[in-house]
Length: 361
Image (cartoon, rainbow, N blue to C red):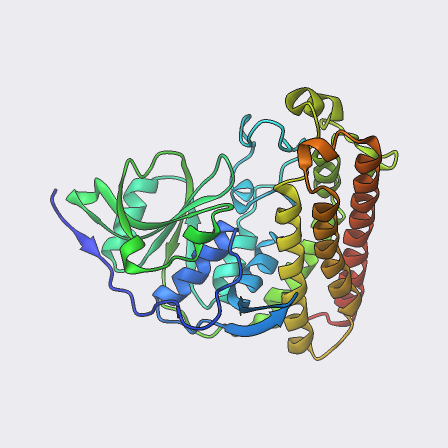
């Protein structure tokens, strides 16, 4: 009953040089950290953009593309693992989607595969399977939500499993998500609470053999998400006036309901969520072009970067959110920008589907 297990780790994140880019998505951060933990190389590069030098994390970018998070807006990977999004899963006034992502572990398993790691995702016997996998010397990722992704990267336990030794990753928590260091690994009690699935790691990382096939499948899924009503509803539910709908039906996302909750509409932190997702998507699309030896994705890359820039434009328009958004002219200007962003998302999807037609694996 007092057995203690601790898996030694073989790597660490380089802390030298420019700061890492923001890591607000929990799953991509956890999987990047898992690879580093197991001794795999970490693809970071010093880059200068927007008058700043930072360390780009191309492992993180790739996981955002393959998981689909780079194509989504205000949804996390835990939505792949549950048939319903519980009420109250976001703070009052945030978007509550009428549609949910289909239950599907394929995007998550593809992320492990493209990292060269074999994994199995289960939703039953979580406690027993987690401890058994750790006892065999392999880490475990534990998935939770509400609000957003909450992921544990476990490397051991004590007291026969009463306390789990793990790092925590949470949606939106940049500092925590890239603080992969020994002193951040803590013992956690009641660790099965709210866990909806676990990924049991079954192998050490090895170079993946089918990168193009995995990227092709991820691009096909991602472009499909951009054409899905899930994204349209996100835009509609985000902005109280709902002018972004341009006459489209926004079932289940009443601007009036949101206005009652907030008195005035909000644009933060939504603008930063969308800005980061699309900008990092553009960076990985550049990598996809290099891998496939083409420039056919250039329009999609430009469109994704334009969405990022539009979010900064909204920020500049809305310097004082509570006051500015009481102005109908400001709300109308922002709605026009959001309308453009929705069109840009569809342009990204069209460009990707055109690319896929020419590069079937």
